[in-house]
Length: 233
Ligand SMILES: [Zn+2]
Image (cartoon, rainbow, N blue to C red):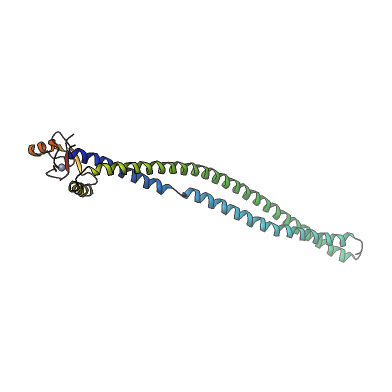
């Protein structure tokens, strides 16, 4: 077979390998945790921690309510127990009871406010958990897709590399050397088609003698301007 035809076929395989490798790199970069997933997980952890702190603080508020209640009960039992008869002392106890009632109500209000905050935090946590569940589900699906793509690309690459070995085996070592150098120097395009007498690499019109040699296809003919190997299909 003509050298240029073999080289052109090799270049098509090499281009396919380049595309597959680049695609594989993109796929591999997307594997692993995404920022969205990490953020959703962090949000759940933060809400959990906030709820834990609130519940812990709630125990203090409950304890203060209990303390205010028992303090008030103690003063009221003295006030209404009948053991204290001195009007001045009774009036004093009455003032204390009123003061403690106020304190007790304030503590109870605090506890109610606190319970509302806990409920709000519980709702926020549930919402964050729902978001995480949704993000995680989507992420799992995407990762499964990506792993599938990775598998396909890897077997495609293995096949391409085998085909390349066979194709390159048919080509003379010296010509392969030139092909490699040109491919490196000309962004992967070492071999170019000739169309309407023009090199499709640099678009110059080729001299007739060059065209004729290129048409025969049995020798490596390079463009007089860009040095690419010419292929007449
Ligand atoms: Zn050229």
